[in-house]
Length: 346
Image (tube, rainbow, N blue to C red; front, top):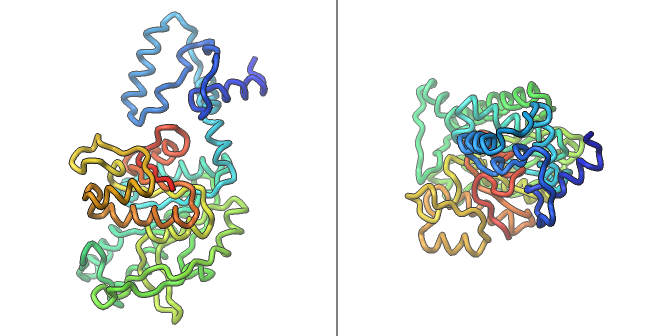
């Protein structure tokens, strides 16, 4: 019979624990030893189960209930590590375009909230903005990868991000079983914007001048999931469009977050940008700066890396750039040793 004491003993000796395994007894059913949970590939997991079943074909069959219980017990050390900690997640890219990946991200957030983590979701919405600009016969113009935002475009950006994308995400999270609250940077003066240095060319594209997280703290403390869109106003009330990665990094720093996670359309930081298998799993700030100087990190990855470095310099414990195209990448990053991308440390 599985008692509370035996469950804790099993979890503390599992392969997921950060402590060394010393004289760990074998599980009664070897199929329940879960090395495949460390693999991102569903195929690899399936093969692992198949191989394990073949090797131990005379072992007792595992019930679905026992299977779930054993997986939960393996996750316990990670839940204990992050319970009560704030995790800021920037959501965008392919994970935002695909309904299946969207559901995956939402379910991951709800699960993390249910087991005691305190997630904050920050989002942009570039593809949706482009869609509405096209419908209104307004040309989308970009300069050096940044959207040129005149007054007319800024009005569309505000309507789409604040009125449509944000509320859609809030609705999805609420339907999945948690309680989300949608905010823009203007609500409660959460963010104060300032014009970017090249505002003459970009228009109402801004930077974060100041963060006041007081409106977020009661929401996070009460178990709500804040959903923040990257629109903020300056001291005069003029709205600005701000890069969502930047907003996520500044919020993570202001909240004293344990972890910042950026969902992207690439595996993470690659040693060779042409080789997806050259993923850097863990790197520190000096290592990242060296890779930038050597030209190994470039293009759209540079602002993401700089955002992570800035948040780490302001007290965030770790920052990760992960592959949002992988289903349940958030859980893989937080609940496994191998993660789902590149983790940057201070």
